[in-house]
Amino acid sequence: MEDDFQNILMNGINFGRGGERKDPNEGKVKTKAKKKQYITGAHGSGSAKQKAKYREQRAKRR
Image (cartoon, rainbow, N blue to C red; front, side):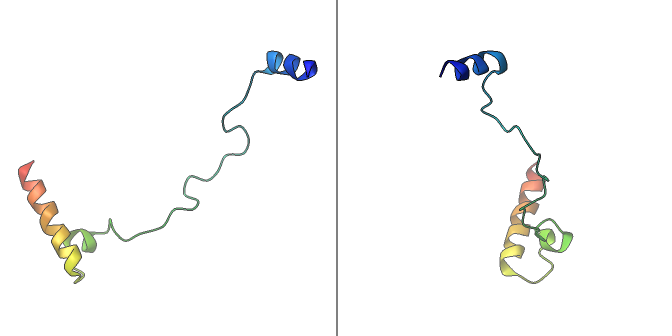
């Protein structure tokens, strides 16, 4: 117990992420949502066309 206390006094407590660093892209889902066809609604999906309409309206307001 006292040995642990001395160790903490000398080295501090590490609550964080010490150790290996992960690849920031690991585990992310790749999506087509940012591609031009999907933004403009040109690929035929009704949902995408609706979203494109809202994006266009929002762009006009700015």
